Image 1 (cartoon, rainbow, N blue to C red):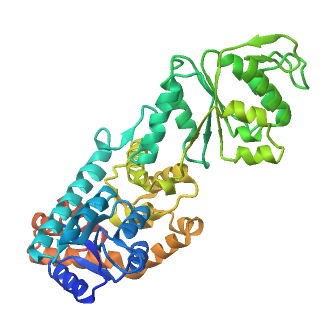
Image 2 (cartoon, helix red, strand yellow; image 1 turned 30 degrees about the horizontal axis):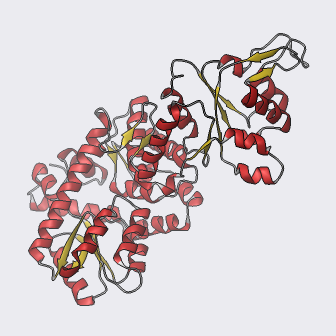
Image 3 (cartoon, rainbow, N blue to C red; image 1 turned 120 degrees about the horizontal axis):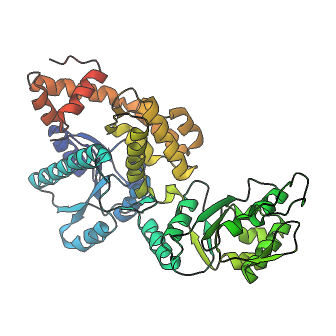
Length: 461
């Protein structure tokens, strides 16, 4: 059976120590906290598989701690400890994300059975979803993967994808709002592919990458001699996208002159090429995106109010990755599979320490930053399992939150690798140096054990 890292959160000292000592005798690594604030501090600093969480405590109650822990690391399993007469509170907690509950007074044999089931469940999930699933078809279960590879598990993204499906069939303009790297262009392409225009082109233009004249020419085209260097007529993106969709990224950077021409097109579906007098009509759906507050830009006089209302007939806001942490794990699996295949690497997955760090990090660069981290780790990894040493540890510490820095320090202080060495040595001794039996004792595959023996320089018979 896999041994777990367990945190017992209980304000009663005698009860807490009893649970701690019992679980340690069963071979689990056990930490303890006497209140919710202490529990959150330990979760930020260390790696835990399971929380045994008392529902009634002074200060933060069990529900508040549950919600906060899931915000830090949604992969931690939580079992609620509740009094016999208040089982309904445990049911509410399970709806909020708790895995199970156990009632007081706690029967230790019942607790052991519950912990054993959780350990077996985590072993199966890790081997089947994280390791094997990365290299066999879709690595995801209940979470979604759209046709254009938007990977998600969170309820927030489910609602967003559902809304995209509802607006796709309309002709309405759509404004996508969100921080850089959240996947605005992917969502725009999903809307286009789900619409009646899917057989035609979707063309993307980055409005912040070109100066005013070049952007106007890019969008509307120009006639020969319209400006210095215009040696021939050029067809603009509105003509090229006829019958399809035009995606305007960073639309908040448009100059006043281009804003006027875009507003005219949205009102009349007409435009003129730069330097020309002929009027053209095209059937183009406009989807725009911005990481800026357009309403504030309107108040500042930098963006036309009438254009703002034309663009945001439907507004969709993509939450940053730190607000939908349930999506981090499936995204990691997706990028591992993608970049392992691209680089011809045989990557089995992540070590539990590396996974824990990635699940807690705040990702100021959102999904794009996570993708870059995984791509780099796949390329530089020395072994088949990506470890902490393969992650850009210093960069993560500099750009992450203070809590992320505490995570690094806590991981270093706890000497997790030394603990792994100790557990492997003990398992090999108990198994008489028989690797298959030792792997069973540790709750890991024999292949993973061979990797660990090699990694730590331990004798392998």
